[in-house]
Length: 219
Ligand code: 3PG
Image (cartoon, rainbow, N blue to C red; front, top):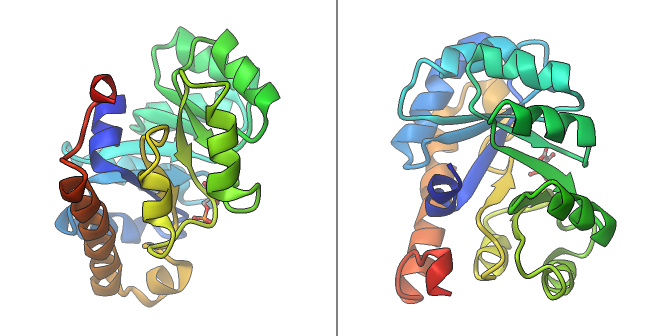
């Protein structure tokens, strides 16, 4: 799971109001070269969207904005295969680990990172990335916590994506910039796919300039 996330380099974060949008959205993500989605539990339709998207076998499907084990379980039952949380809830993390579910809890302080180590995690979300100092803060975190890797999320766009993905401590970036609410409401899946293609092109170009997608052991 972590290797696949690391290869894709980007996790599209979705807040989808209508189950009807699940199919075309999955098409746009897969068609654009990013078969991955974090469906946030911020809408009434979220679990239905997860159920619908789970039909796509090639789509790496996670659930986001999870605040407790019950929500995690409901989303996993609906078909999600990984869990992302905005903050570090030890109960949610423990439930996921007990049930062999990959979990990437939000961290925003060294105290959170200590907890991540206590739980034996190797990959965590860094949230809200831009608001808490972005790349500068992430580099500062990474120095004493070299064994941890991060999924920065929050305020990331095509403009600053590569600043993050160029850091060895970054496995992938999360963000909603490709699936903006106004595009979803307008049903503009063509533009969503264009933004996905653009993002994939950026990280692919960076990877080829730096010698390909290196694995952690190569670094
Ligand atoms: C999340 O839920 O992870 C964030 O809200 C996504 O942040 P963004 O909307 O700034 O990309």
